[in-house]
Image (tube, rainbow, N blue to C red; front, side, top):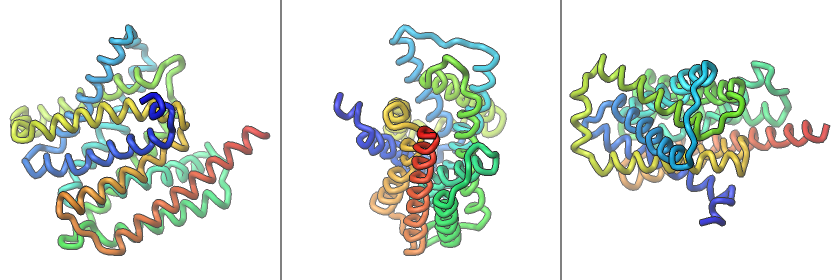
Amino acid sequence: MKALWDSAAGLLLITGFLLGVGLPLGKIASAAGVHAMVWSFVISMGAGGVLLCVLLARRQRMRLTGHRLRYFLIAAAISYALPNLLVFSVIPKLGAGYTGIMYTLSPVVTLALSLLLGMQRPNALGMAGIAIGFAGAALVALTRGEASQPADPVWVTIGLLLPVLLAVGNIYRTIDWPADTGPTELAVGSHLASAGMLLAAIVLIPGLSAFAPLAEVPWVTFAQVVAAAAMFAFYFRLQAVGGPVYLSQIGYVAAAVALLAGTIFLGEHYRWETWLGALMVMIGVAITTKAQKTAARRQAAG
């Protein structure tokens, strides 16, 4: 276990696998009538609650300041509550595998936004990666989900908002990370804030009766809580061992797991253009990742 805990490659595979597993689990829950808001709440409350127990077991405490509270609320909205709500709303329309491809676009969009905001200098390799990634995304978007039931273009457009939200969250967390605050503390605060937002929305919109369908899928719910909590535990370890650039590659693994699980276990079928587009997206992300590593080395040397 110690060898795995210190292996960036091993941590990458496990983190990406756990992220990808959540998508077919969400589709099963949706088929059982679980509202997207409720399933998003399960993830945030489960991950936040388990990680809070870990924090308390280490005899650490949550320190609340104005800056941390602001961070918790903003990060909760743009990194957890809205993306998860978006994901589990579009999965029934697009399929778990197709939705998983959207995760792979996040590093490309993050780099594009950082270039636009002047946070990073553009280079030819990075621009090439962005171009290939967006070309792949366009091809995926044109296939419109599962081959047997193409989705309305509106749902495809909504799905493409996911990598934009994730990218905005990546940039926000970078520029507003509170000083002297560990990642586990921030994860706990952000997830619990997300759970609070989602609970308020559930009370106001579908009502507390929306929790009833969870009784139909108790083991799926349990599996989702375990997967979410474990993913974030490995996620932060991966960030420490591999760094943020390496961390961004979990989208590769998550997309592959979601596509394979959707195809094998959920009976989803995708056109060859979808698979080609997914491959192009992954190539684009690989190029942008290499561009980021090259830029980081030059900055360190200069």
